[in-house]
Amino acid sequence: DAKTTQPNSMESNEEEPVHLPCNHSTISGTDYIHWYRQLPSQGPEYVIHGLTSNVNNRMASLAIAEDRKSSTLILHRATLRDAAVYYCILRDVGTYKYIFGTGTRLKVLA
Amino acid sequence: ETGVTQSPTHLIKTRGQQVTLRCSSQSGHNTVSWYQQALGQGPQFIFQYYREEENGRGNFPPRFSGLQFPNYSSELNVNALELDDSALYLCASSPSAGALEYGYTFGSGTRLTVV
Image 1: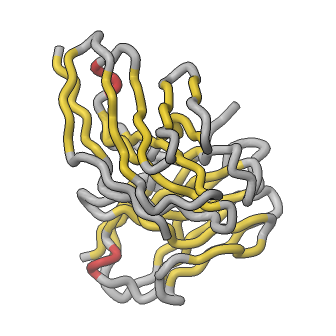
Image 2: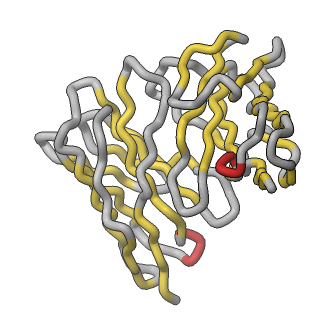
Image 3: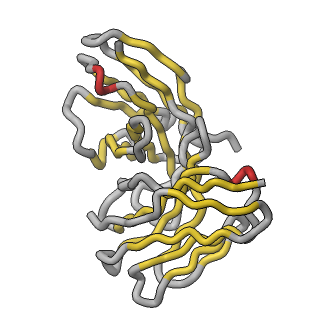
């Protein structure tokens, strides 16, 4: 199973953009990149996913490197409600499971 | 649309006992996965059910078992509870087992404490 590497923690000021990096140097051609976040006392929440092209939705943007060995989740304007653990996960077309790491704990400062 | 609901929210059991956790999947979702999350760790995949059949399993012993019902709700059963089984148990549902264009909707989990 391909693995991802994320910083343990990051801080951001409220109303500023946040770039959360993820390295996945062993990614295969059929791995999708998924991002989830987990707020305190809740289950993980789907944020965004992509394969090769950059993706945007109402929550965030996902920028994928050309060689696909890294990606960045972009929160355009961080709010206090965005404080959570963010997980970057690779999911292969042949498997159904997510392999979660320990994620990045994002702290948003008022 | 309703999300994924899990019951109970908290549970305390004694070592050696058996426990059943329940999950109602989101409307329209036919796939349910179960995860175990120890304190400070990311969730670990236990197994997945698609249309009442188990179609994927993680590295968990056979005393972890499950069921999915015709309405796509699901149960997780754990026999012979051990202290290390203390964790948050998460249920997640999806519209389709293998389609990668969908994410999963997670419930808020059941916090199991084994004493």
